[in-house]
Amino acid sequence: MTPIHFLTIEQASQQLLAGEITSVELVEWHLRRIEALDPILHAFITLTADQALQQAHHADTEIRAGRRRGPLHGIPIAHKDILQTQGIRTTAHSNVLRDWIPIEDATVVRRLAEAGAISLGKTSLHEFAIGSPGLDEAFPAARNPWNPAHMPGSSSTGSGAGVAAGLFMGATGTDTGGSVRHPAAVCGIVGLKPTFGRVSCRGVIPLAPSMDHVGPLARCVVDSALMLQVMAGYDSADQHSADVPVPDFLRLIGREIRGMRVGVLRRFIQSIEHTPDIVAAFERAEQVFRDLGAEIVDVAPEGLEESHDAGSLITTYEAFQYHGENLARQPERFAENFRGRFRNAAKISRVEYESALTTMKRLRASLADLFSSGVTAIINPGRERPAQTMTELLAEPLGKRSLALRMFSVSGDPALVLPMGFTENGLPLGLQIAAPSFQEDILFQVAHAYEQATSWHVRHPSL
Image (cartoon, rainbow, N blue to C red; front, side, top):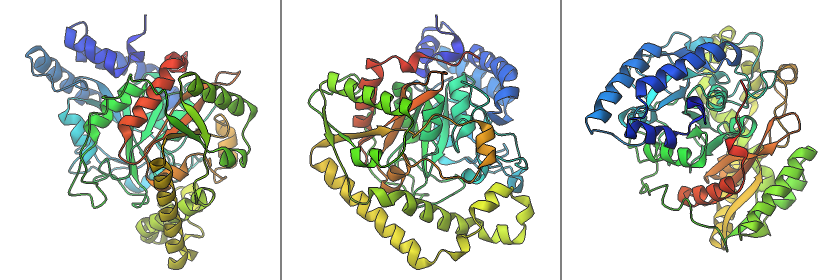
């Protein structure tokens, strides 16, 4: 039988509704697992055990009284520590905010709480979602539960590691260049970057507002859809929030994908060095789609090759606008690797920035044309290689990041990473699937079809 800590949200929710388990039991079970494993994994910065137990008692009372708020009611989750939480410190994994206690919740935090989800606390990240682990960082770096000697992605590291390890059943993350999908790829879970503007960023410490997204990390595609259903929606307090209807994200899950045209970024993939295990796993993934009746077509949207550098420039430029004054005034409060990201930021001109924005617009238009031509979804490896060791990461903390993910942060289209296989030594490999803007329901349909045709999602770390 599946241990409690590896139940999906859907499974746990059904057991809560049937009275087979209580929210208090769920929370207590996860707190014991956190006590045993977090000294190794460092997924948490702040644990809110007492508050979570109080909320669990309240959830049980409501559910027994027939006032169930939905499938997330009574479910233990966690929040990336860059989302503001009222009365609970929000550090962004930085000494700059080590003791900051916000006076209000981020919109996403509030919406999940109103749906009855129970937060166990705040998870580790890279400093302000752009730094890298280092000896002088404010809090210990999270570790990969499949092998703690390896890194768990960037920068929603604690959220990814904690979901994979069974410390909580779902988590929030942020994604400006791949920081929800990267942890998903190397931790063997599902990470979704929704359409730009689909989920409010109000109350989230910004990195690059032109590309910032908030998304869920979960154990399976259905759980991702359940979380997005609550997180999504227009927010007038967020200037980038999209005033578009929120559909039933579960409505297409379970339908076959026969006849769909699935695009492969063949030329782009071949232009990047991938490890042999990634290449082999992606070839198998393509065959799964063929077996499901999809037509595989090669696609090459205009602006794709330039999107990574353009996205990096936009991120650095916009982040410097936010952090530059503090960096100049009190550099010693930031870790060395964070400072390293901005050594040349002041030299980026407005002309260069606007040129990068033009590249962004060109890619968005090109992908929109591609999708309107009949391509339903696009697939590519979620990373060029498995997770490197923490020793390798610490030796080259400012090295070039993965090229596989940033293009959809730039385009704003929804993209999801889910398990695609494992290396011989047991490290997860990820597959990325993207779909047209505001069509997450189709993205979930395609991803779920692949997920159910494979068995990678039912494997868990042995910790």
